[in-house]
Length: 598
Image (cartoon, rainbow, N blue to C red):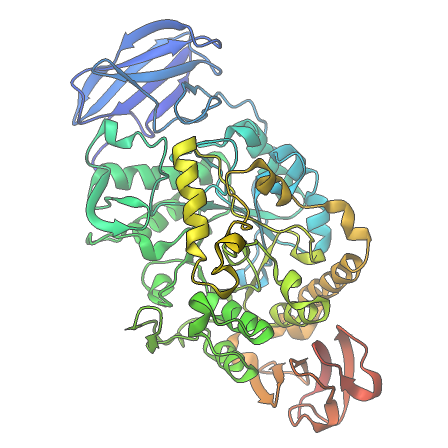
């Protein structure tokens, strides 16, 4: 149970009739003031805030409107507001009071069951050449026409620097200024809703970035060293202030920006021994405010309890991705060493949902995962690439860069044939030529540490044991690394991109319109088998006379359909990634067949 907030709700600035009410929380300061600045940074005045008890301070200033810059002053020290709604000058500068003038044109996002979702992950800064909400908004009709039902924005909370992935956020109530004003973000969400697309936001509650986090200046009840994270001190969810910060933040995005869901980053790194876990608490509060809000966990533990006990809607299930990649590439370095290549293992992960269900996991030597019979297909978010699986590669290479066009199309057909919730990464639909590299914009000392750490990370990989080869790994701090990661939308009209885009359009239309697909959204509809290097997946309705069969040939020679036991004598081709000459599925290709159920 969180303690009462006497400031009247969310901390930070709140525009009220006649002025702005400022709320702050500090257990470190005896005196708290709010200092106002003009647009040039000149101090306009400093105003004492009245203690409300329990660490809360309040001050209402008449005549203060949207656009006003301010900072808090704790016992004489100027400190940025961790509840700031906008930080136009960066994490260390004054905040800006935001008085939204946006007039919403829609009443909310489209209502679809999770089983009908096709999720598209995008990074605002590299999705377009401009890297803004406004430029991204112009592309929404393209995504709607493709068949995307939901966008998942990578984090937009303010972080240090002018560019980055967003996972180093430190001011979670302030949308990142280089992408645009907060009202531009509202307009983006509104326009997505208008064209029939829901919008989810990636939020990071397991750590704060290495620069610009001022929470500790306000209170020692936000962070703790009792738990270890790879990024430093952990958020302390045993304490009311930290729980309030995260739960209020989740409500803020849902209520004020009308996001339809949240993707919760690295929930396995959230430590909370409280009687009520922060994820359950967050979910209950958010769904009371906005019923139907989707909460998706990124979690490496393969634990169904995230859904069955903590109330998440689904989980990123990376085992599928890993098996696809090792089967297509033969890679076995890094965490791929824990995954056996081959269609038999791929078939098993499709049948089971997770690959690891309690077996020993080689990278740790410890048991990993639990059986997932309690979860249906929609709870598993499957992908063949995402920002991590591309960007955490040394050269930021996409799957299409590493396996060739035909094998890429095979993997794409498999992903979109399955009833699991598919996750696409921006540009995937046309096999984008641009990489997605790891890029940062830290101050010089921290930036040098990041650059060297990035190259040291790959020193054990065969391709980078030579220091000269490691030096070829793009420098995360270089502006060119960021610019190379931008999508080139004009290439969609050229081959081979045009062929891949047409395939994605056909696959998503099939997923949306085919009656058998719509009747077979449960894992119970799946039958999976293998023959040699051929994977066969059937979606068969509980009642009905037709099924759909995917025949995916991962081998080097054509596969004759009449020799595949799972394929009946009579069938009709619905879609093929390569020509089915003489009823044979060519190497590195897939075919979807319409068959009569026996």
